[in-house]
Amino acid sequence: MQRQGMTRKQVGTLCVFIAAVLYSLGGLCIKVIPWNGLSINSARNVVALVVVGSYLALTRHKLRLNRWILLGAVCVCGTNVLFSVANKLTTAANTIVLQFTAPVFVILLGILFWKRRPKKLDLIACALVLFGVVFFFVDSLETGGALGNLLALFSGLSYAGVFLLNELPDADPICSVFWGDVLSVLVGLPALVHETVFTPTVIISILILGAFQVGLAYVLMCIGLKTTPPVTASLISGIEPVLNPLLVAAFYHETVGPMALVGAVIVIASVVIYNVLQGKARGTEHEKQSR
Image 1 (cartoon, rainbow, N blue to C red):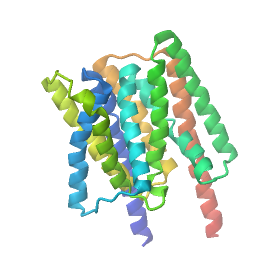
Image 2: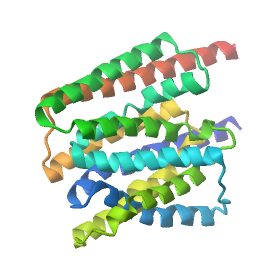
Image 3: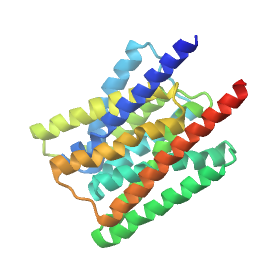
Image 4: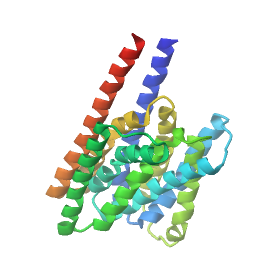
């Protein structure tokens, strides 16, 4: 039984990792599409709905809707919309690193809604991440993109909600993803119908975004979160803010401002170190309880 539990945990971890790799395709694909951010998000979610709907049908998972599933759907929609629009208003690196503040919002939401008492380590991590975020906005004063940075920060708040989907009462994460994709399509539909550029690059990029970066990635994340704690999942997702700007820099030749680079190092390092220390603390506590 213990071996089976470990196997399920490893599969969950792998699913979260693959999802993070797929998410990292977003920055590059969004940059090469000459559309409004809302249009891109609407179109990619049309494709994503086919993927998520197929998964629901294959697994015979009943499509449900209640207030908690709807709340999760709003988080999914907010993450999708804010990420797409922010990518058009600031650099891909700024967008993804600011979205990577999600673990801090996980801590803050836990304090507000689940009355979880913050530990000293939690408070230090929050302070360091917020300190790193300041560098992005200092950089934007020189290079522009302040609105994009702000929207990316809010996408981190929405993304925290995605990590917490399993903790909502009577929740159903995959149903939240489906309805979140529906909301995403509707929000951007007025902008999408006015787009006129449908080159092969645009169509292929939309298909990649919808099928892999949104659809399959969210399915894998929902599977992974069944056995992976939210904060641990956010650590594994640390591959995304590394891969995303590298792909954009390599194929789109977008550079990152020096102050934003400093902020990125502070944010990523703070989140990773926090999660590592949290993991060690849980391991020590588990050893004490098992004795």
